[in-house]
Each structure stands twice: as C-alpha cells, then as structure tokens.
Image (cartoon, rainbow, N blue to C red):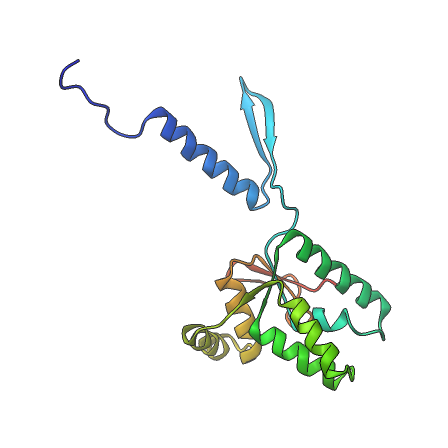
Length: 185
C-alpha cells in the first residue's frame, strides 16, 4: 500500500460531527430520535429542562414584594429554579435597578437590599462593554425600545439567552432569536 492515503474525514470523525449536531439540537430543546432500520432506537434529550434565561428587574422585585402573593410565589420559584439549574442571567444594570427599586418602592433596608443583590449576583452576571452600550442605543433608535430595555435585550443576546423573563416587553415576541416571556400571564 505504498503511496496510498486517506482523503477527507475519517468515518470516526464524521460520526463525531453528526453526534455533535444531534446533541446541539437536543440542547436547544429539540427531541432527537435515532432510528435503526427505520424504527426508533433511542431518544436524546437535553439534561437541563430550562433554557438560558435573562431575568429582568421586575421579576427579582416581585420575589420581594408581598403585595401580590401570586406574583411573589411565581417569581421566587423561577429565581430558585434558574439558580438550581444554573440557567439564569442578570446584568449589572439589573442588579443596580433592583437595589434602587427595592429601596424606593419596598422601603427595604439598605443592608438587606445589599444582601439581596449579593444573592442575585450568584447568577451569571453580564457586564456591558462600550460596544454593548452603542448597540443598545442603535436598537433604541431603530426599533423604538427604551434604551434600558434595549440594553436588556443586548445583554441577553450577548450571553446566549433564548428567553427574557419580563413584564416590560410584549409577551411572545421574538427579537433576534430571543423570546419575550411574561411569566405572570
């Protein structure tokens, strides 16, 4: 076999590439069924049941607000589940808005509010760059979102979120591959 060589990918490389594609589909929430001789042989499911999710300020605030027990319970459940599954994302903006809001609206003591910010900072925390700020300004100019909502959407996109939990945007709307979800509807 002098002079012979294999060109192109090997069979093992092709199989690994195909498996990687199937796993990515499963991680994106797709049900992947592998068949053998035309019959289902196995299914691949994502191990995480929740998608990476950006959590807006109002969700965090409702978890502290005793004036609406239904929203408080729902917000608390969402926060704890996303913490447990490590799928929750906030940004520096969200942590700052949360502190200001619970101090002003809920009259929470500054020391307790600081502790709550520390708690929420255990989520993945997005830190905007100048490019993110400029992109949010452009989104504000081009699409009419408030600057702050545009920055939320930009940071969700930058951190790979598929969902934004908020009351502040149109429920069910898809923006650049991100679904807006109002969890209280």
